[in-house]
Length: 279
Image 1 (tube, helix red, strand yellow):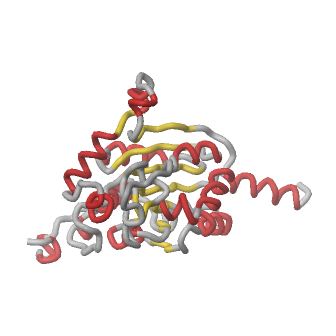
Image 2: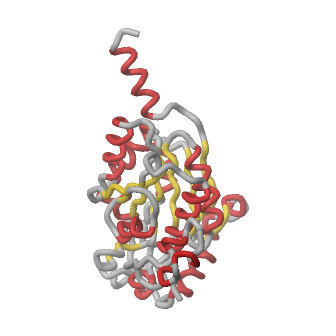
Image 3: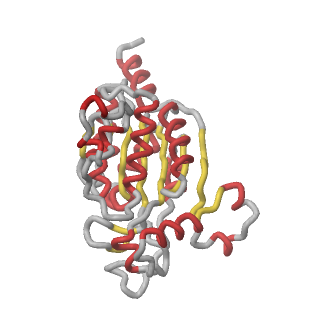
């Protein structure tokens, strides 16, 4: 019996209960359901103010996440999420946006906006959902598709070198940078808590499953096969220190790469206003 069928007096009073029977459009085995649950748990456990902690999404499969999330959501144009959030933060500095982008959304059409948001150290939590493929539009090879793996536009194997979102974030100036996978939900939740408390741009990359396109094209059609591949391909930063480049080929480094402090965009903007007013 689903929660929605229980009588009002019998319905469990748990902060996640109203989401437990919510319908969603994610494919079977998609990692986004686990990510939505993790984010919702953090949101509920911390009793976050929905007027302050607003969700923003880009365009992609992840755009359906708000149907499973609490609070309010702003859906932006493809690749333009960091630019929209910049405007929202300057208009209302009290906001702490929690944002979702896909790898095509943030590392292809939106790369320029991503780089400048990091450079400006915009005070936001930016979660990159990395599933190795363009999932919503037919399984084309994406900026994160591993070399030699297949997609609908790479039937003989993708030969380009994939983007490393964490390296780009660090090089561009993000002050908190981390990567986990959908097999590391507890670690992701711990990092999300830190990111919410951090002032500046917090970038969290989550490598997740797309069995419908990436898995099916690469001989991992069952969700459990793809889940195990991601889990077994993850290597902690500490363990990677004792491994060669050859051993790390095709692996996902996971952990917290960087945490530094420097003024965020709103702090700098206040200083510009003071100077303009002759203070």
